[in-house]
Image 1: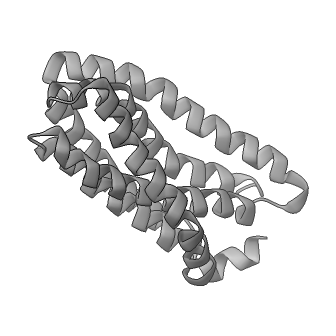
Image 2 (image 1 turned 30 degrees about the vertical axis):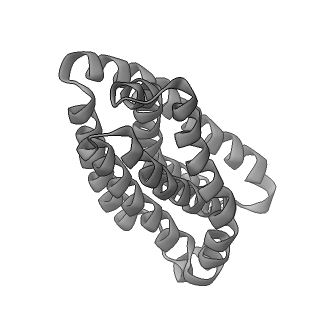
Amino acid sequence: MFSKDSGVYIACLAILPLMICSGIIYSILPLYIVSLGASRSEVGLVYACGAIAGVVTSPLWGHLSDKKGRKVTLISSMVLFIFVFSGYTLSKHYSQLYFIQIVEGVAWGALGASSIALIADLAPIEKRGKAMGIYNSTWNLGWIIGPLAGGFLSDHIGFRYTFFICVLIIVADICLTALAIPSKRKMGAIT
């Protein structure tokens, strides 16, 4: 019924909403940070906090992904993104965004460690290059749709409602991922 590539496409479909929301957030986040009183230098510092957190936690998430499974780690990442996007919605001053960016860096670490490994697990060895290309196209598609949507939404409904829409999308995405992505035991039969 399904081709050998169908698992890769299903996983990419599950990852796409998060990539769209990331594109939405990152296209408007610098403007939002400035609107909360930050200077341009402080915007850079806020982003750097997230990147540092990702550098530190990515290997830990990779280990957890190997031990507990890709699906658990991917869903953990999505749950963290819900907290991050909710934090953006509720922030009153840019200084609050330092902590939120740290959590976001942790979430990116989990996403990066689990999603690439998931795609590799789902793809037959002879098609892993193709699978990685499909996966990269998913990220790029999300980052095409996301910034367009982010600019439009923030212009028409404001930053906070745009962030809240992303929360709702990720809640739905967790349900999709929980249902569509195979568990660790079932995945072993695919590879």
